[in-house]
Every structure is written in structure tokens, then in C-alpha cells.
Amino acid sequence: MNIKAGMLLALAMTISHAADAQTAEQKLTLIGELAPKDAKDIADSTFSIGTETIDRDFSRYDAFKAYLAPLGAKHARLQSGWARTDKGSGRYDFKWLDPIVDDMNAKGVRPWISLGYGNPAYEGGGSAQRDTDLPKGVGRAAWLNYVRAIVTRYRGKVDYWELWNEPDLIAYKFTADEFAAFAAETAKVVRAVQPDATISIAGFAGSGSRKEGDFVRQATRKFVELGGRGLANVVGIHIYNARPEGANAAMDALIPDVRAIDPGLTLRQGESGAPSINAPFFALSNMWWTEEAQAKWVLRRMLNDVSRGMWTSVFTITDLHYSTQAEQQAGFNSSAARKASAMAFNTKGLLETRRYDGTGKNDDKTVVRPKQGYRAMQAVTSIFDARLKPATDAVCAASNPAITVAPFRRDDGQVAIAAWRSTDRPGEKPLHEDVDVRCTGITFTGEPVYADLLTNMVYRTKDMVGADSGALTIKGLPVYDAPVLISDTALIDMW
Image 1: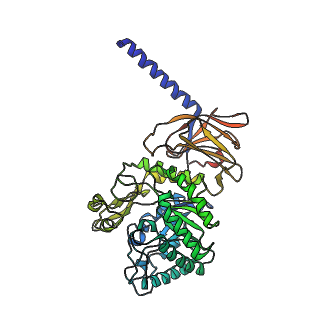
Image 2: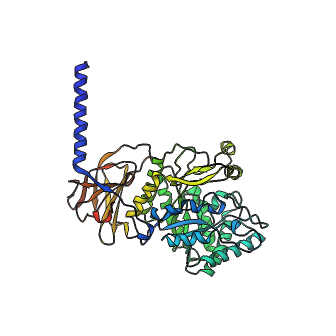
Image 3: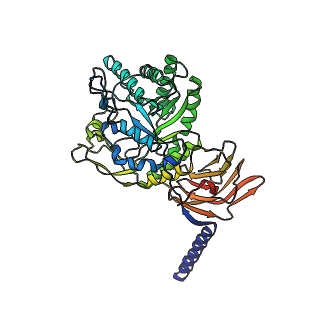
């Protein structure tokens, strides 16, 4: 190719790209930005935010509380802090937890409490760390007394109790049957004090795949055998996959198994998040993450779960300053790299903290700023309240099978359709593509808008939506590896 021909080809390509851009401008016109909603302005939703580890001083409520209500989550997970509350005398000092529970409720955020971790002040009480054994003997009796006291104190302010955190991660210390006996004994105390409480049989670490799910299934089976159907309402699952949709098949297999054991049980996703940097400890470690990838992951976690009708909790609101020594000594952190690491810094928070020091000497948990994931979560909570549900009578498909399409309908008939590329980990294939979508059983009430949940930008659509043989069609919908919405305008509030 000579120089002149090359220049002509480059000019033609430039004109082609300009024409494509002009077409995009014509069908989508930027009109505003999604307005977040305060928790008090949302009646209810199925979204929770993690506010964990305050009990062990790995995070501070006062440092992040100003960001809680504006996030728009209606529920927040706390950890009970037995070792912080009871120094071994059997007298309980709740002064650290009382103001947190009260402040959350005042903000319109309903706290729920994970009853977990041991207390070294008692013989057989276990430890206050993640790899603690179950309380035994004197420790077990003290544990049940503590459960009775905390549920009595907060009934009316807390109505959801989780029985232990990730017991299957510590299966080298006790069996599924042993955990089930402990959980059933604990549940009976909760139910006796608060008969209408929602009780979760743990927050299991296994995603429910056949290998990981064996502990979950056996513990649930034994729990029901010992306590009877109806003692618990929920089986909690913590889903950590690099691709948020990666556990869907395992969930689909686990749900009927759980309901066969007790038809009254439902699955809830109680802890799930992604880091914003590559780090050596915790779930999804030793992978390259960025703030944008984290934000996309959070969006896909939330949209995936709400589209499947699953209550879900994002982990977590702020970066967590774990004890490096405790993590190095934990039995599940057996690799040489983790034993040698000096950074047990968990960056799954949606808020960045100032400075981490694993020894605690120069640590600073002050919040510096919200990360991109914070604003992304606000986008979802501002739209998806409890009234907007999966449109189970509708069927949607995209021209590219790599695109997930999820239709929703509010109880007043307003409609939204979410779409995103779900076949790859967030950030791996970030470029946009145009796809055609075809839906039956659903239609918009008027000309819809297009909302990018990552950027929060809202666009007017033109000539994108039509009908074909009774089906709704969307032509040239721009999609990528984060969810977008095409929605009735009544569902969208803008600044």
C-alpha cells in the first residue's frame, strides 16, 4: 500500500467512526444524572450493606456512619462481639453497641446481627478471631447466656439473627453435625426470647457447589432434625466468585435441596464483595483489581441477585484493618505467602480509609473518600426498592448470548430491563457493543430512558424501542461489563 492509499484508508475509517458516533448521539441524548436516595426515603428493599468487624476494632462506626444512610441500603450487618461485651464475669457491657443499633434505626437502616466468634475469657469459649472453635462446656453455657441477653436487649430493634460466621471454613475443627447441634441450641434460645425473629442457619462460606455444599446441606439437614422445621427461616450463603454470576448454577442446585429439608427455608446472600487492589489475604486475593472493577463487580452482584429474587448484602461499607498477626496464625491461611505477608488490609470497602498499619501502632481508620463502588451502589438502591421485582412472566434474550438480560416490573406497572456482559470477570472485556434485545410478556409505558449504573448518567432514547409480532424489541442497545438499564422514566429520579 502506498502512502496516498494509506491516507485515504485512514480518512475513510475516521469518517466511518465519526458516523458511528453521530448515530450514537442521535439515539441517546444525555439528560441528567441519577439522584441517590437516603435510606429514610426508601420504604423497603432487599439490599443490605456490611458494617462488620466493629466488634474487633477493625473498623469504627463513627468513622463511616455519615455515609450509611445516603448509601440507600435498608439493612446493615453487624457482628455481636461477645468477647468485647463480656470480659468473663457474665455481666454485659453493651455501651459500644447500643448507640450503633439506635443510630442505624434512626437513619432508617435496620441492623441485623451475626451471632458469632468466641470468648477466650471462658474455658472452652474459643477465640474472638475468624478461626475460632465452637464454644464448649463452660464456654457453651456462657455463650447461650450471652445470646439470651443480647436478643432480649435488642428485640424490637433487631429482627434478623445469623447463627455464626462461615463455620464450613473451620471444618477442620468441627463437623457439620457438631455445628448443627450448636446452631440448633442457639436458635432455640433466640426463638424463645423473640418468637417472630428471622433466624439464619449461619452464613456459610461455601457457594453451594457440590463439594463446598456438602457441609451446608448436612448442617442444614441435621439442624432441622434436631430443631424441627420452622426453627430457622434462612440459610445464609457468602458468594465470592471473580465473576459474580459464577455461583448461579450452584445456587440453583442448592435451593431445592434446602427446601426439601424444610420448605420454609429460603436462601439469602449475606456477605459478598470484591477488593479494589491486589492483596494477599481474604476472598478474591492475589488477583488484579481496580476501583472500577470493584464497582462493576458490586453492580453485577446486586443486579444478579435482585433479578433472581434473592436478598443480598454487599461486603462492606469501609476498608477493614484486620490484625496481621491473627490472619497469619489462622489455620485456613496456610500458604507460605500469607504467613509472610505484613498486610491484612481488606479493601472490599466502598469507602477508602486513610492509613493501614497491621500492628495497630500507626493505624488510621478515618474515611478519606467514597470509592467508585459507593456511588454505583447508590445508583441501584435509588431505583430497586421492594416494589420493583423480577418480571417472572416475561422472557428476554439478547442477540449476543454473552449478555444477561433481566426484566423487572413495579407493582404500578412501570418497567425496567437490565443488561450486562456476564461471561467475563469485571474489567476483562470492558468495551461497549450494541446488541438487539427481544422480550415477550413486557412492555414500556412510554418512551424509555437509558441509565448507565456505573457512571450514573441518564440518556433519552430515540427510535430504539419497537414491536415485532407482539414482542418488545430494543435495537442497538449499548452494553458492556457493567449493568445498564432501559427503563420507564417514572422509575428514574435525577439530580
